[in-house]
Image 1: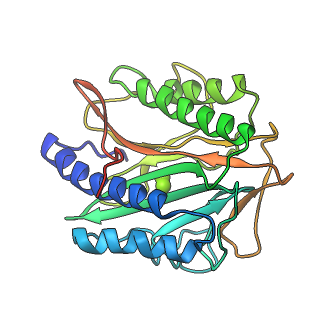
Image 2 (image 1 turned 90 degrees about the vertical axis):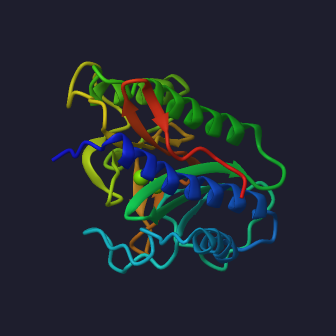
Length: 258
Ligand code: MG
Ligand code: MG
């Protein structure tokens, strides 16, 4: 069931989303060659702590997961697409890093992700990240009352496919509210004019994932969490929590300095 949020609730979700934006900004600033993924997790923990927010990631255990998630960020490096567990891995020059973070504040959740390169970037990685961001922007632009879920999915998928990139199906966007994952599902590819009609008060996470080689194939790593590309090529993942309002799409997780 899709729960519609009042304007007051959307304002409260914006406060939670602001904490996520702060955490992602702080993590990105801290991410340098030689810094470990666990250190990045600690940076995000500190932002959440200072804001009085809790983590919807920490201890999260969806049906597919063999263990509760042990961190407040997902840190997915190079061929990892999403759900990477922060480890002692130290970032190397040219690593493509995707960081996903959530925050829960006053009972409301925000969920957002960024991709960036540490050190000297490969041009191909910058193109991949750019496509993911353009797909996200297209998805947000389509998140309007009177459209349908399929319009968002189509907008995302078209940008990714036009750029020649693969899309790992089975993972994508979702409703957000008092819980991190609510109805509806928001796929990263689909047919325009199909699916659930979008209404003011719906709040959804839109989160394109792209695979550089063009394959859609992925596998789950031995930790039971990390999704990796099947062919070892690189992936990017970006996400915003977005409210559908009478005035158009409202991004609730904009990046903000701490
Ligand atoms: Mg997320
Ligand atoms: Mg999400």
